[in-house]
Amino acid sequence: MEPRGMVPRGNGRIAASGLFEAAPGGAIRRMSEQPAAISTIQPFDIRPTAFVSLGRNEVEGSVAAIGRHLLYASLILSTGAVAQTPAPPDAYAYIIWPQDGQRIRGAFWVRFGLRNMGVTRAGDNAPNVGHHHLLVDVRELPDPNEPIPTDKNHLHFGSGQTETRLDLPSGEHTLQLVIGDAEHKMFKPPVISKKIRITVTK
Image (cartoon, rainbow, N blue to C red; front, side, top):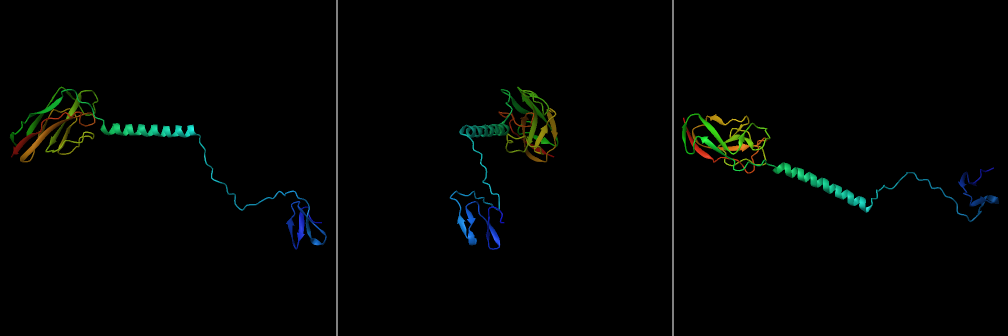
């Protein structure tokens, strides 16, 4: 006896699915007009990509949050790039000695002057104070948004010194004082001295 639901065909069998039956002589005839429940076997389990659907309010809220973060970041970057310490009113620096146009033989002392402002060490964030920097043979002032460079032409006096001794080669030289804040940046507006010219002889 053949298993229920199977119809002989040659050496194999086919599924009848309840719609056909075997007739005498090996023929196959229709049993009913009811649709069969056909099972389809797929070799791969392929599923469509899942997409998240957001409502209008959720989308608008996300866009607004992103905009706020970008605004905060731009404000932080811009503030860090241009921030300068305000200078006290009427503060100004000057070179006490040597005087403009002076001829000097050998090594010499340079004495710093500062009015309407206090002298302190580097790193001191107290208001209305700063420390000296001496520019030797420098054509242009440093970038006000960056720390004053440290090299043989930009001399730092971060311990609050008000004088120094120089030994320059023979020839004409320029000297200029610049007052720096706690981070070695120039104040706003800059507190600087007049640039003087001297001639050194040996």
